[in-house]
Image (cartoon, rainbow, N blue to C red; front, side, top):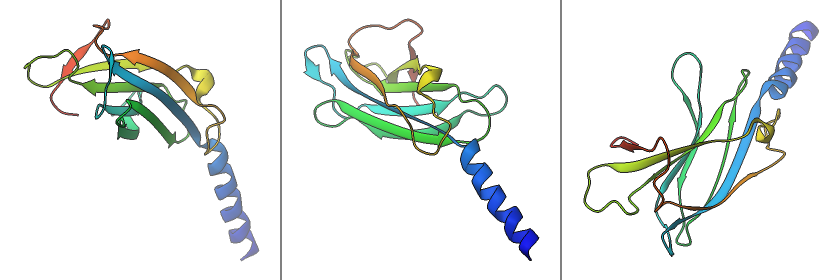
Length: 136
């Protein structure tokens, strides 16, 4: 019984060590106005298989957002993806922009040690590698 309890405690403590976390905050504009209601997501891009959704939300009335997510054992490759209709007239679907989060902002714990500040991003700009997304 003691062996099982010891193994259980070891597994719990080692699993916490293997967890990784990341947090991102920022503000979105559309030209000179706050971009409220834009969808923001944190993704862990995997080398094999499907990418992992870490967190998602929408910008508040002032265009602000903050996301935090955790994932398991393997090194995280984190991207912030923003889905919006700024300067998009009547085109179908939404504009999708993706930004890679620096590795130095990924913590080896269940709580992020640092928050990556994406600062103020103006979505009226056409970003390189921008895409359109109908499913988000």
